[in-house]
Structure formats: structure tokens, C-alpha cells
Image (tube, rainbow, N blue to C red; front, side, top):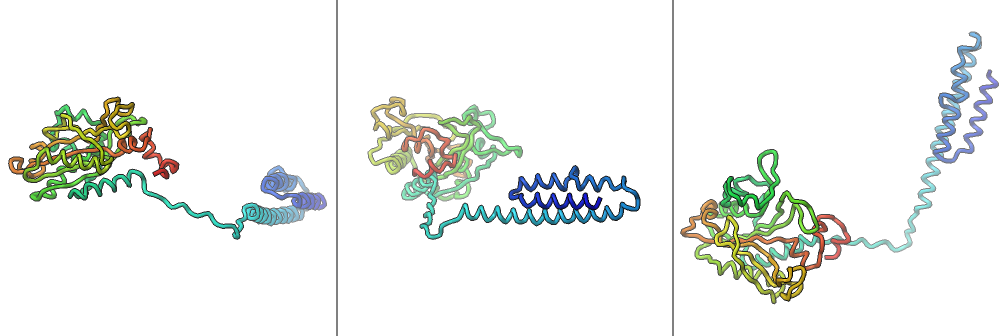
Amino acid sequence: MDNHLDTIQAEALVALESVHDQDALRAWYAAHLAKKSPLMIALGDLGKLPKEQRAEVGRRANEAKRALEAAYAEREQAIQAETLARALQENAVDVTLPGRRPRPGNLHISTKTLRHIYQVFGEMGFQVYEAPDVETDELNFGLLNMPSYHPARDMWDTFWLDSGALLRTHTSPGQIRAMREMYPNPVRVILPGKCYRYEQITARSEHQFYQIEGLAVGHGITLADLKGTMLNAARRLYGADRIVRFRGSYFPFTEPSVEVDMNCILCDGAGCRVCKYTGWLEIAGSGMVHPVVLRNGGYDPDEWSGFAFGMGLERPLMLKYGIDDIRYFYGNDLRFLRQF
């Protein structure tokens, strides 16, 4: 029996010398140390030997097992070292070659445009006022002249939270916050930020988008002030030759309400597919602040007046740069972002 165990050990060690990778090492272990290997079978058959031989044969079998396990561990370490050395050699870096110059990052096109808008309106005396994305029903609707039964609420598809709050559907609730914070002083602010609406995402619409709200409250402010502000902004943002027109519209929080259009920046007003052959593009909704909204903000509408406007960010950029899918703004594709 001892000779048989010596043969098993010797054959296993000879076989181990030809093992040079992990797959072969696992196969060797299965053949020489696993449950069905000759050595383990011999250990399992100890009970079949005469009683006086069991101790000696058991001792010899355990010696063989420990020897093979030690040889296996040593070979495993050697294979790991060989693998590491090979990887280092194959992936070696030639330090004498010139390095790759890191490409610096750049601001997102939305961020660049927002900063330009801040500058344009800042030069007209507007401050930047930031309001929260999560709002109450009262601020988002009620205090903007839209009580719970008001049909205008259907104009916005709202994301509601379990707490009863909501993700703001427009930046207009910031008007109330700004007025209440700045009363009794005049107000001249823009309120940039994300808005959220429960809408299907397509090439032309997203469930989140930027909006820039504007608000001015003071003594003697008229529609002429609104027209002058929007004309100056359009020419500063889109070109000095822009022509602006105003159309009557309806918003619950302004009275009167007007839509602001400018001549198409692509066809220069001649008519094209983008402007639906009208020659005009809508750039903002606006109007004189409704007396109810002024009063909810803390200002007496008999003494104070004001105007407000709301303009998008992504869609004008799509027109300006010929971007055909609004989803690119939020896709984090560097091929798109590095163009601007």
C-alpha cells in the first residue's frame, strides 16, 4: 500500500510540473486532490485494511496529501506571478513616448446660455432669485390665481409627491416667494430653474426642462415696460436685427396676457418648416401681473403694478443650433456636449 501511495504522489508531482495556467491547475486539482482522485479514494478505503495496517497507511496517505497540497499552493503562487509578469510586459508603458494631453472639460450648453441670460438681464437691473423645485399646491397654483376648481390647472400635467407636495410645473411660484421676501421694496428678478411635467418624452418634449421667469413690480410699471424689456432681451440674446411682436393670450396669473414672438432666426421671417411658414417663433409668455397675484405677494394692486414673463431654454437653443432632439441635453453624450 505504501508503494501505491508513493506512486500516486510521484505521478501527481510530475503532472504538476507541466501546469502553467489557472485552467490547467484546476484540472490538476480535480485529478489529484478532489474527492474522486486516487489519493482520496485510498484514504476512504482505510477501513477495508487490516486493523494493524491502518495507522501506518493513514499516516503515509496524509503525508502525501499534505505534500500535494503544498506543491499545489506553491504552483498557484508561481502561476499568479507569471500571469502578472506577462500582463505587465504586454501592457508596458513606454515612458519615453510623449504623454496624451488631457482634454479639459467645458460647461454644458445650458449652463453657458443661462450665464449669458443672467448677464443680459443683469445689465437691465434684474437679480437672479432661486426658488425650490419642490413646491406646495398653494404656491404652484392657488396663490397664482388658480384655485382647486380652476380649469387652467389642466394646462399642466403635474408630478405629485407622497407628502402632498409637487414638483413645480413652472417657475411662476417663485414670483410669490420673491414678492413676499422683498416687500415693501420694488422687485426686479429673474427666476431660472428646472420645471417638471408628467409628459411623454419625445424628440421635442421632455418631462424636465429649464424655464426663466421674470418679474418686475414697482410704481407705474406698464405694458410698455414689458415690451421694451422683451425687445431688448430678444435682440441681446438672438441678434440685433430681431423683430418682436406681441399677441393677446391667456394666463391665470397675468392680465392682460401676451405671447412674445420674434421673426424666425432660421429664415429671417421669410417662412420655413421650423416656423411653420409663418415667419414667427414664440419665445415667451408674458403679461401684467394679475391684481390677485400682486395681493397674494403682499403688494396693493391699487398702488403697485408689475409685469412677468416666462421663457424656455432648450427649444430656442434647438432652433439656434439646429439640434433635432431635446433628449441630447440630458443624455450626457460627450460627442454632443463638446460641440458647444
